[in-house]
Length: 611
Image 1: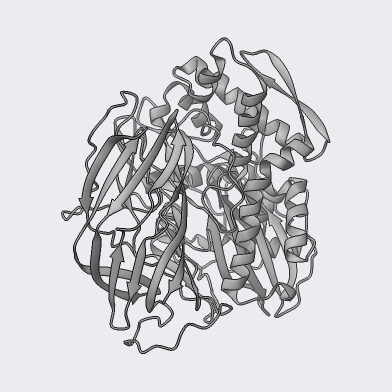
Image 2: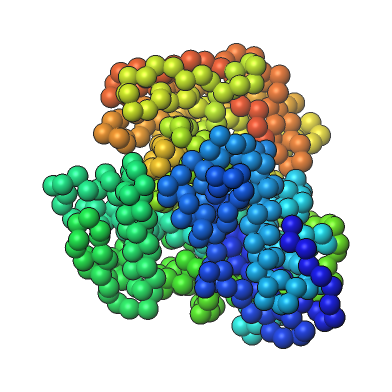
């Protein structure tokens, strides 16, 4: 930890510790907050790399070292918050140490800029993080640090700095579109500031996903007779990793230029060509990602129990929100013109110092939620594999009406979760890897849908049928349900794939806390990637008890089990059997429809009520 001496005056530091980049602002002696510069830029990569001496290097230096030693690099430590340790090289590094390295770098820069004294530190965190996650962040921060919910900080920036008034009692939607993730939050203005009503997030919707779509477009445009594209998308050595990183940098720069200009050129190293790109093409390629964010905005308003007509403002935060297509997609959907600022990536950090003049030493600031609204879902965020370049571009997907968070696999393994949760054996361990017909990759582990999800029904949804239920159960769940669709985005090494299927799975919940899960008539889940068609089929019936605990549905006391088979191009790749997952899950329910969300933010199931 950087030791800071005490001098007169008030110098406060606000840190927005992001998934991909970290921003910090400094307010000294009553002057307006100003951003810190990390290696000449206000945006510091959140990457951490283990050096040869066992020390941790942060920021652009970490990215540079990771080119030669990708196994020692963690590009997105914030995603690892739910893991005790992270393997960097041969060393197990506590996640809290990675967090501390990033925060220490910001504190050190602030100490150098302010002359060495800090009288208050504020760190922002996702609104959906629970107390355990917030404590991991707080333990890594300087003593006396206060935590503030990111959308609350953003709302203060727009109201107090950008001058956009929200009347007391009025609501605003904060659209936070970053490099790696997206969050939509509804906040309400109070006499003292802003309170959080509801928040929903997507782990696989950010600027990187738009970059991936652009690179996929370039790959389709530029023929490859020399085998250059595999070197750029799956670099095998340090030289290729440097060139691949340059490609991603060029694509990102072109995307940013198209926020200001109607057209530009993208240079492709190795090919040594300049490829023209225009804003219309960018808008078309970004549309699937943006449609998912807009759908999430509509859903979070329903969860908060707020009609669109109640919105006083829509605030755009996060660097990716500066794309003109964002505002163009939001205004017709929400009926409100979004508030746009020049540097949306600074909004959360600067807003963290507004309205929080009295830090609470040693404790996290409460993140309030409306007592009438469901608690925000907490999506654990397993890490992406460590790569010198961003993920290989996924195939463009049809825009979906519901959020599609992704499941992230462990470093270095091909972990494909078909459409739902991992099958867990009786001993509690994940299924073992088995048949390996493809020498390039391990066999796929099985995955199974789990019973219903968790957050309470939205106040705005239709009433559930009138049934007799035991205390503490949700009458809306009681009855028979048939799955109509299920989709998931999963990581295959450095690529993101989409599985879909599973129609016909039957779930039944009674009013005494018993459930039945029947897969005997279900359709398989399918995906196509790596030149192969993959499908996973489930058969069997599981029974058990369910209860609602802290707003989540939890399964226990199982009998029966589900068998599964994974085929690659019609030939068996893996198989096994096991019980359903017991992880708590969230849901939305009305009289005729049930929507389930994966506990790790990995899938969305839709079901219809049947007689």
